[in-house]
Length: 231
Image (cartoon, rainbow, N blue to C red; front, side, top):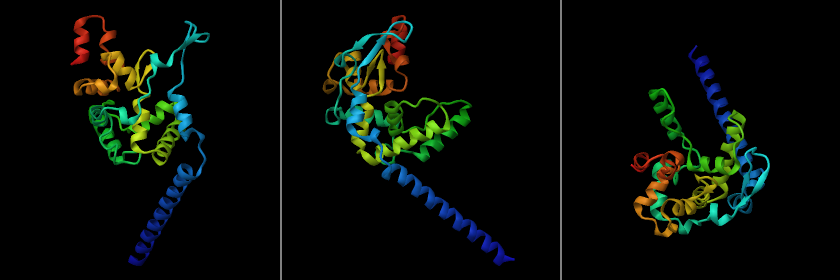
């Protein structure tokens, strides 16, 4: 009897190991071996530097475009203030420099926190996942679309350094209107170049990334609401 039970457990363990091995092999093939033109740096930089079209009220007919220096000011990593790097990692993804695109413990913590609160109060997406979402524009909330976004995140981690991924992220997050990225945020909020940002100003921009409209003092109806946005 015990020999039979031992045999069953060994069989289950063997198939589990084989299953994990096959799964790792498939992921490795999709991430490393499969060609992906979207992972070329030129392709990503074209996305980050593209013009923003302006449409009539019907949303179909284009009036024109906004110039790049108005809505996009690309900032390479070596010009991103260290204070902003520390603040955005602390606010969005504390394990960014140690995980491989996916933070499993972070996802579990978010699930527990959301379950206890009875609503979504914490997200489990990493900066890499958010970068993939911003760059490649997930078109639906289906499992297939989410898995594709996850695959893009793993490909980003395989192809680029952490510093480059953070550079992509810092130049793509939404600020206001058609404005995106740290360069625009520094000008929009404080009329400064990124190199001139103080610790408090860098922290404010990092904190506003998740809810830009909520923290934007320029869109509030009165001074009291504007002060609340800044607190």
